[in-house]
Length: 576
Image 1 (tube, one colour):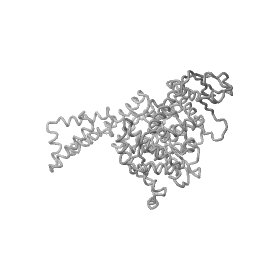
Image 2 (image 1 turned 45 degrees about the vertical axis):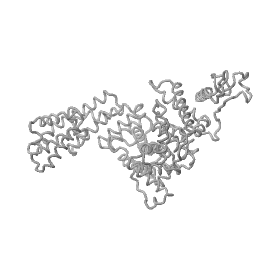
Image 3 (image 1 turned 90 degrees about the vertical axis):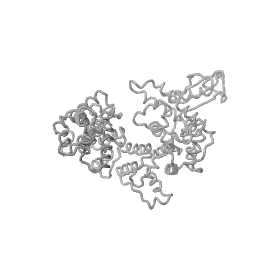
Image 4 (image 1 turned 180 degrees about the vertical axis):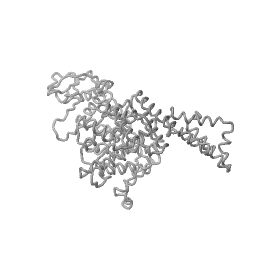
């Protein structure tokens, strides 16, 4: 380590150099200089010797470190837009995982695409990490942008403090990658995925095996600058992988590659419209896309890799990769690009897409998808601004028809940046209209639906509200009203009288009553208490179990019914 009595840190603003700070060693001086680089208006930084007499006219030997912000177009790569405010990472490990890596993918998309590397590769390869850190002013600019976004609002904290924390994360990632650089690790490409995993697990020597596995994978993949080769190799490893933890790590590499437009385009092939492309992407994410198996027989064809990832998606083996695909669907849906060639077909096609995006009380793609749906609807109704977004929210609801789907859309939208900032009152208004104003279950769920399905539907809405980001008092208000409607529905409709009909065999009545107390049928509350009281009354009968199977002749069937009944009682919470 080079040490000096003192080093001065200079910043360049509006063409003039000025002393900004000081440090006692070159490493801390460089780190502080790069933090200054992220500040608005700073066009360059230098670390110079304290003995320098004229900071405006240094000799080459006086300048120990220098970084200048590019001013022309040339090879300048801009930091990408993030979209919604990125979640605050409290620990450096969170940067490796889903939300943190997704933000990195968006920020550095142009750089990553140009260099042919993924975020996971960069963060686990010391040379690539250093190259990214030294590239123009990209890293300081990105850190500054994230710090500013995360510091907004009353609880956001200080921008400078957040910026320092992010630079600290960068340094920790870099140091860990440097430490791993000297480790002898197997080549997955040469030694095979499962043999490599076994060798890494045996020789971890204090470092996390998962981290070392990612280092080894990065060494092989970083040499592949063709995006499809990188993707196909990762998918091939995943197909052969016998270790769930290693497969979870491979999911990171695959999801990173799926953030590249070229990979998705190759996977999609020719599409007639944006709507067709988005529907195909959703089919890919669900693992249900039809693949030409004859073409897939040739490992050189795109279909070979498409078939492999199809199977992995269908088995739910790649959760982060599925999110990456749905993130692209979300971003394209939110854009102003036409879904169809014929503008008149767009509303119909969009309604068909909503069936896939909002199948029930949960949205595919979560809050960001709810926001994208709202923006797309505003394009369709051709209304802009805040008024257009409110009108769009109102006009999406009739297209959903089902109350559970409406609840899912509104509550996911409430959890988005758009919902919290602009549409909060609008969402509250619709929630009241859907679930507070109705005086009966029949006003929420249409009367043609069977009673058990009505109760299940209202119960699913109950749980979605309970698990939402609504304030606790608001959750209580809505769920309590739904519970009271369910209780009234059971009493007024004489549901329990019909279930506990003495003319039916006791074992059938008992199972039906217990089913009323299943979590998916009725929530724990006033409504389920009515059914529980009847069940407890039966259970207290002296010879209940004998009577329960009295009409069953086969001893084996008797034992099975008793066993199944106890399982259902356990599931319904009767045994604590």
